Every structure is written in C-alpha cells, then in structure tokens.
Amino acid sequence: MSQPADAIAALHLVLGEEELLVERAVRAVVDAARTVDEQADVRRVRVSELTPSELAELVSPTLFAQTKVIVCEAAQDAGKDIAVAMLHYCADPADGVVLVVQHSGGGRSRYAKELPSALRKAGATVTECAKITRPAERESFVRNEIRAAGGRASAGAAAALIDAIGSDLRELAAAAAQLVADTGGTIDEDAVRRYHRGKADVTGFAVAEKAITGDRAGALEALRWAMQLGVPHVLVADALADAVRTVARVAGVPRTDPHRLAGQLGMPPWKVRKALGQARGWRPAGLAEAMRVAADVNADVKGAAAHADYALERAVLRLVSCAGK
Image (cartoon, rainbow, N blue to C red):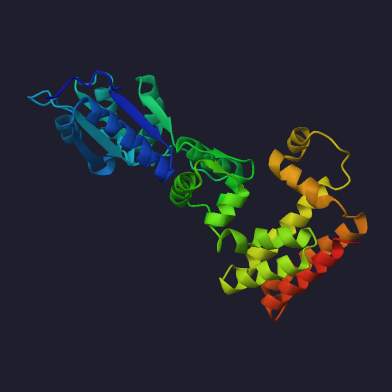
C-alpha cells in the first residue's frame, strides 16, 4: 500500500558535473522514495525537451496517492519558459511528488544560470557533485569509498590505488570496495600492490621510487615491465622528474614536524614523510645532476632522442648513480 512521501524532501537540487556523484545522488532520492512507497513512479526527462504544460502534467499528484519522483536532467539547458514554470511549481510543490533537478552549475541562458540559486531559496535539498580534478580531492574520494565499504586506509594507500587504477572514479570506487572485501578492511600500500600487481608495480611512479632510492635492479625491472605493458614514455619521464623535484624540496630541510612541513610545501604529510626518507644520502651535487637528468629525459621522450626506451633506461641509470654522489 502506498504511504505519504512526507519523510522525503519535495525538492532536490543535484548540482555539479561529476557523473558518478550525480548518479548516486539521484539514486539516493529514488531509493528513499521507494522505501516509503515501493510502487513509486519514477520519471526522467531532459529539461531541454520539456514544455511547461508537460511539466505541469508530470508533477500532478496521482488519483491513488502514489508517490512520484520526477528527475529533470540537464537543467542548465533550460530556456525561459520552462525555467519560470519550474520555479513557479517550486513555490508550492504538490503533495506526494518529489522533484529532482540536475544542474551542472553553468547555463546557456540567464534563466538557466539563475535556477540553482532560485531553487536554494525555494528550500531545495542540495547535493554538491562538483567535478573532482585535484589529486588531493581524488585521494579523499578513495579514502571515503574505503570508509563507506567498512575499511580503513593508510596514509599512502589512496595514492597507491590511484597510481594503480587511474583517475576514473567508477573504477576507483569498484577497486576500493573490492580491496575492502579481499583484505578484511585494512588497506595499505602493500595491499594495493598485492591485489593490483601488474598495474601498480609498473607505473612511472614505481620506476621513479626505485631509481630515487638507488635501487638499480628494481628500477630497471620496473622500467622494463612498464615498457612491455605500454606505459607511455612521457608518463615515466614525468614521474622521474616529480620524484627528483620532491626530494629536492625536502633535502636539507631541518628535522621538523612532517605536518608543518607539508603545510609549508603544499604536499600531503604522507608524501613528505616518504620524501624525507628518500632524501637521506642525497647531496647537493647529486641533486643538481639529477635535475639535469630529469630535464634531459623529458626532452628525449618528446622527440630529442631516436629511441625513447633507451633514453629512459639511460636516465634511470644516471639517477641511480646520482643518489650516491
């Protein structure tokens, strides 16, 4: 039997362009509606294809008090007429109807751009789904996924998983859930590498980590695996340069709290701790030479060298030798 949808907010604004987060936000509203009313009627419409009269029909209560969930997609494409109609409805929403408005945050028209603020003023429940672009945001996403699945992650586990899987949020979410299930909940960098060997162990960062610590055999093995699996030369070169820059930034810094140093350098504390360990044994002359190596190999993989594979191997060997100077 249908029940009133009083427990669910009548208006929802899903704001942002991160597709996975948008889908989850909409699904959460639909699931909540179906918890209240198993027979809830869910309709999805694109705002650009919707007329005011069609909207009025969609948001009209049913004769049998059935809950309705109307998902208006791509509201940033709204024209004047439909935007005005939506706001008119939001001023006095119907009982038993849940309106979900998806909006990227931009807009082709003035009316579309004004919709989010107007919906906020109308009392809509807002779910922010901004695009995740920064490394720190992506690491935070991974940690939250692991936590939501009932697990715990070490400081470097999130970065290791991103290094292994890539930046796609769907793949990261699936991998995080799988890791929690496979490990019993405690996830560190070793766990990531065990369960994603063949990816995590052959990235440019794995090559760089071996080279920067003077592990000649490990660096060459990681490089050869990376080349066999098709890791782009430029990504390996970038990782080598990043490792050298990071060590150079912390080398010679007086011993201090990694958290304080992280704030000064704009780096995560775990990365500072790792870099401090890697910087042991490095001297100014070696770092200066390593910076030249990083610059040379960057140019080599972008066309200066006839054979990029050979250029990378030579750079790795030079970096290993620099670590002892």
